[in-house]
Image (cartoon, rainbow, N blue to C red; front, side, top):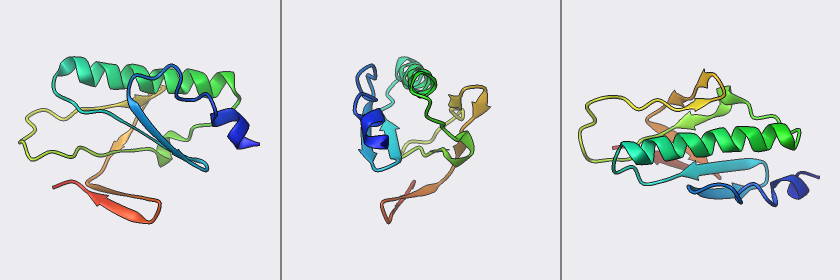
Amino acid sequence: MLLGYVNDIWRNLESAIKLFADDCIIYRKIMNDSDIESLQIDLDRLGRWAVENAVKIIPGKSKAVNFTRARVKDPIYYFSGDQRIQEVRCCKYLGITYAAT
C-alpha cells in the first residue's frame, strides 16, 4: 500500500517534487547558497518522513544531477542521512534519459 504512504510526502517540502509509483524526484532552481541549503533541508525532511512512515530510502540508488550552462567552480554535495548522494552527468527517469550539458 505504498500510495497510502506517499500521499503526504510533499507537505513539508519547499522544493518541487514529482512522484510516480515508487520513484521520487525532488528538485529546485539553485541561484545562491540559500537555495543549496533549502534543497538539503528538504532532503533531510524527506529522510525524516521516511523514518516516520517506515519507508526505506536507499541512498545508493539516489543520484544528483546539475543542469547548468554556467561553469561550476565548487562542486555541490547533497546528503541522504550521513551518506553523500552520488553526482552523475545523466539519469534515467520513466524511460527518459536526462543529461547535464
